[in-house]
Amino acid sequence: MIRFEDVGLRYPAPGQAAGPEVLRDIDFTLPDGAFRWLLGPSGAGKSSLLRLMYLAVRPSRGRIFVLGTEVASARRAALPRLRRRIGVVFQDFRLLRHLSAFDNVALPLRLAGRPEGQVRADVTEMLRWVGLARKTEAAPDALSGGEQQRVAIARAVITRPSLLLADEPTGNLDDVQAERLMQLFKEMNRLGTTVIVATHNDQLVYRHPAPSLRLENGRLTGSA
Image 1 (cartoon, helix red, strand yellow):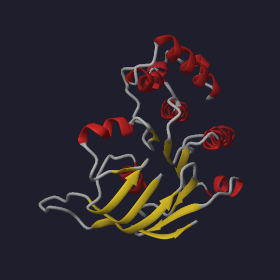
Image 2 (tube, rainbow, N blue to C red; image 1 turned 30 degrees about the horizontal axis):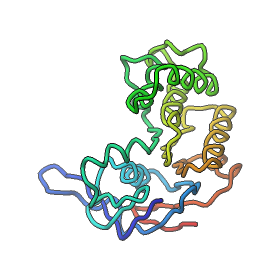
Image 3 (cartoon, one colour; image 1 turned 135 degrees about the vertical axis):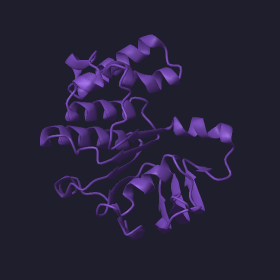
């Protein structure tokens, strides 16, 4: 499903071709259908590792395989199809401000060409499940941080992706909503989705024990 082989990542630096490596010598393999916590202190490289997984950046060195595809050798035309199989919950939500909550969640289905009747039924049910049945027509700016987070989560899972990546998905949620979210992630994982959740929430990890990837200073210091 996912394999990293001796991966390093550098970002461009002002006045230089590239800055120092933010990820170094990353090696791991995740089997199909895995659930993993991604752990480590702020600045350890968790978000950068997720960006490599959802193909936002390419590694400076090493090889990455995502959903059975070697990213570096894949044809450019194949990457959009691969990205459509990946759901991402961004830490900063990345909702489209000119679209309602309903239309933000519906967007991946419409891009995939789903019939509008199916789109309406699926999005209505998903927004009901995340507790936003009465906010379907609200613009993102009219929603609280926690409500925006739930819209972002609904958008990430609405297509039932093969790979789900979540970057601090419970940061704006109360304990009840966080537990509800975890039940959704675990059910998706039970149905075959590979799920990777980056978090600082030690209580959440304690309540839902699972193997983890742990980063420190850009290096993978533990995996299980």
